[in-house]
Image (tube, rainbow, N blue to C red):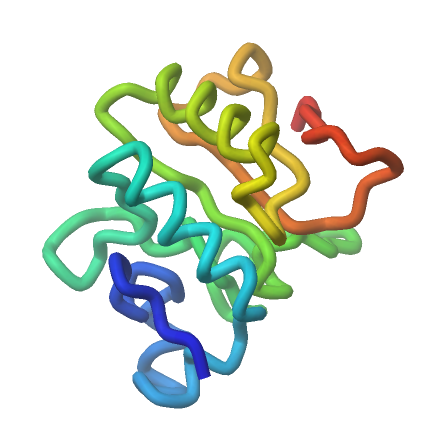
Length: 146
């Protein structure tokens, strides 16, 4: 089983998920290739944060989410996010624009195996970069508007 070199499991799952399933089982929620991609991005770009709840921060739902997490629980209609499938992450960086360009570069160089989609940096009011491994219709990085 692959475990990230640069992220601990608490950075990848919500507190509810971690408290229910624990360290060892939580790694099973993720495909190996998306975890390798996260390590690749961090090695290339530098410091990146996903969830920071375990060290006093307020980010709790930027990785894997479950039905009891507030974002999911508040939905009034069907919600099939990549986050609830362990296929999406909201990446935080001090230089978000550079993070976007670094991810595009890594993808174009064939260094990302799972990540196929990225939220447009022009479409979000948030200070993070959403990436996921949903399938696309081409071999290009799909940039989408949330």
